[in-house]
Length: 83
Image: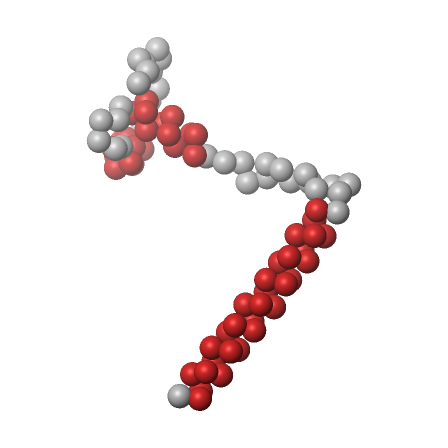
């Protein structure tokens, strides 16, 4: 737990939302730290596969997985129709 070095103003609605997300024993500082820690940059890593063949390999794995899923779904549908 940290001690408050500064203060910030928030609307009553924001305070209610923070209170709703607050876990037992947490301070508002703890809530904010947890929420900010869980915040992720959706574009982080964008372009990380540039210049490699990893993107193509991932696409291949994705396609194989899709085909396996379609096959399982077909097999399940066929087994149900046989009942």
